[in-house]
Image (cartoon, rainbow, N blue to C red):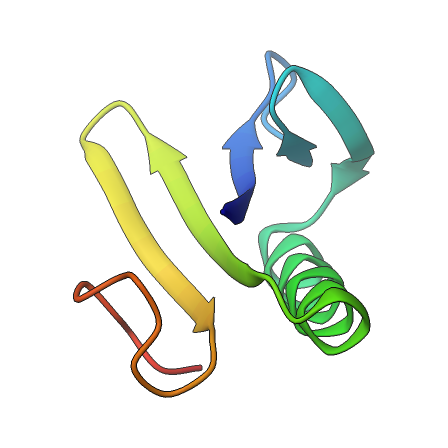
Length: 81
């Protein structure tokens, strides 16, 4: 099982961090959203051992910004953070 933290732009042009449909943080600059989302994913992985990823979601597509997993974990699509 893996957990995804998604960074998305809101209607006001600010950024939010979501996990599923739940907004964990909002009204962030892009730099702060990336920093905070990567920290959330690292901490979640350290606490649970579960794979955790961070994606930047935009109209142009999705970019993987971080992937935290044990060596040999289920995802072959890893962008090491």
